[in-house]
Amino acid sequence: EIVLTQSPGTLSLSPGERATLSCRASQSVSSSYLAWYQQKPGQAPRLLIYGASSRATGIPDRFSGSGSGTDFTLTISRLEPEDFAVYYCQQYGFTFGGGTKVEIK
Amino acid sequence: QVQLQESGPGLVKPSQTLSLTCTVSGGSISSGSYYWSWIRQPAGKGLEWIGRIYTSGSTNYNPSLKSRVTISVDTSKNQFSLKLSSVTAADTAVYYCARQSLQLWFYDYWGQGTLVTVSS
Image 1 (cartoon, chains in turn brown, yellow):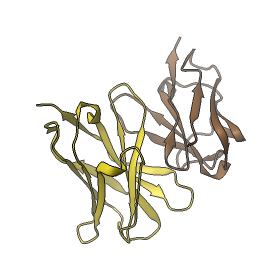
Image 2 (cartoon, chains in turn red, blue; image 1 turned 30 degrees about the vertical axis):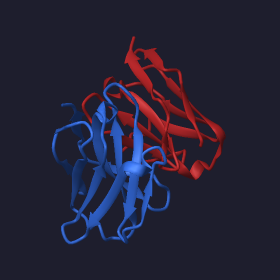
Image 3 (cartoon, chains in turn yellow, red; image 1 turned 60 degrees about the vertical axis):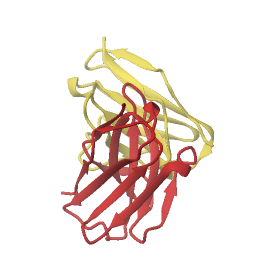
């Protein structure tokens, strides 16, 4: 079973700053099956990135994904107020990481 | 615009069976391009994949839940359903239904989620 470990657990940043979120797999995974989601309180997750680096429909270009093998990164270039949320990575549709909370500093 | 909506009892007694239905609108569940999945999230915790079904009725389940889970599809009603037997308090969670890409296995549409509490 592949385990996804996300770090840090919490990221405290100010609007306008850059956020870098990490997702590490316990063994190599195909980047084609790596996705990122954003979840706000009381809401369902929203797809941001699929195939490790492709933005989903309607997702602003300040969100970008990269990585391969066991190390993947979600970058938010300049945080907007609406970006403060929890972010999850997911692989092969079966396994989710534990999440990174991006909070306002 | 595809929409998914979960429905079912919000309270289930321990040892009983949890039953939820997901109604899909704005698209056909028989389109053949997607899996239809159930995912849950205990309060304050992360996401757990429960299982999925294809329009043909073929299913895949989380091994940790497999002995208690049944997912079925009713294409005539554009619905798919979840049954989880022998529930305990550990099954208390928000349950989501979601559409999963057949090719790249990401979830692009989600229901709003429904809270199911297991308590006597």
